[in-house]
Image 1: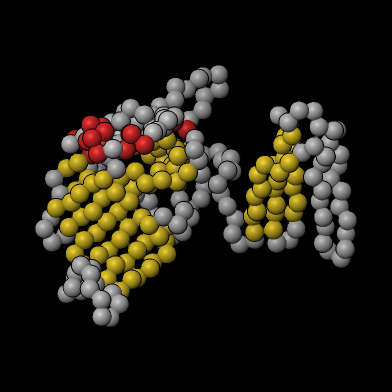
Image 2 (image 1 turned 180 degrees about the vertical axis):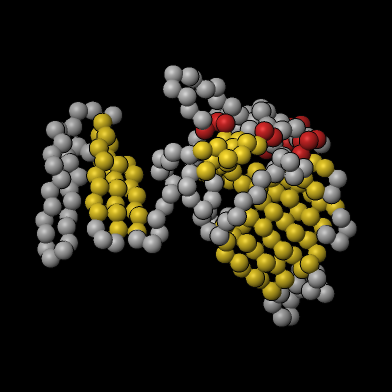
Length: 245
């Protein structure tokens, strides 16, 4: 697999294209440009295709994918991670699985290597020594009950992460307009997929003092496994057999 990088820059935008070619493409030629006023058109070399393309606009600069020289500011032993000062407003988050040592092959880890569920769940709330919170810009969406309709919640306020569009927290109000329940979604970047996905979802009842936590999979041994399913796998009897209480 042969690769090339094509970069175009102007005053308002930077564009980067990753080009790939399988087999033996023709010798890559210099990208040609034809000017008409200020516009330019760049051609992909023969035999190559565009695999990835990135845009960075003025005023919306991305920091994802950049290389930084940082200094470890804080180590979280419970999360097997560290906060790294990279010279920006917020520290970077570095998990042990993302550390690459030249010449050292890292064993791939899956579920089963995380904290035990009994260590995560504590009376009244999650174990805060194993939870991590950071400041993020969010969109705040307030949903109120439509007149003439009924629902257990008179209002809900959703906090949507600006980067991932994931709902990271929700305030839920009862019929009296008082805060009744609060939910938070603990998310994680799965770089090997890649995707941004929730791990633990916690719903707290502030009036009764109880809570429920869902998505507790830290003790499972596998994250992904190629499975071939048949309709028989989804019968009531089979599902009862694979379920856990």
